[in-house]
Length: 253
Image (cartoon, rainbow, N blue to C red; front, top):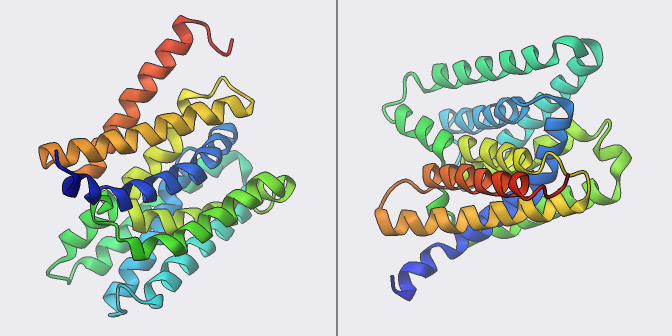
């Protein structure tokens, strides 16, 4: 593999590292709250905003799509925050229902489009290998804001601000890597470090995420297989290996 081929994965790798950096701590909170499908629901709502913008012919590289996706995700986050306060005992069921409704709304909007299937696949699987450098500055600023809020405004981030913070992060990540990778980046590393309560677990999860994105992208270049699907599998395999190793050597117990 020569240097030109390796240079192809640099922008996608940076995007993946940004996603992992912000999504690992959010994923730990998702597991703690027991609302596993919130990421799929909010990601699907953000995707619905993107599809709506496409349907009404906003320029895909313009601010219209970003506003549509961000507004949709924030409204979805506010709705889920309200439902958690009102019906906490059925919150997971409501999250699942919200996901299905948003997914079906997306299908309805795409029903008349000759390229509807392509748009839906791109939303779900993403085009991480084709992330451009121009997309990275705005994503870096947003993810930095999310991380700063998470670590330095803990009461807000883990309280009333959680759903809003989550919606902001997912709005950016779903457009970079797709819904499947958003879910995998949030949940799989968090599962691997579920026994750790300290920052040590974060470092392990970050290592899993970074190595998985790198390995998946390299495998995609080498095999010409879809990058997102390979990264999901490398996340799973690396997490299983790390979990087995920690259990075998009783690390963290």
